[in-house]
Image (cartoon, rainbow, N blue to C red):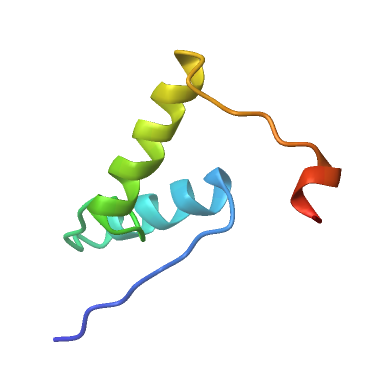
Length: 66
């Protein structure tokens, strides 16, 4: 058998696909995976936490282009 990856563009398409597969007794599962590496996600979350805690440094555009 083949495995198909389907990418509906909106909720209407998603619902229609689920309805058709259910009507045809086709087994399917919802699988949400992040396209990002777990280490990268941890770094982003740590950065967000630092921002909320005020642990940031502001740099002006003039300082960037020195």
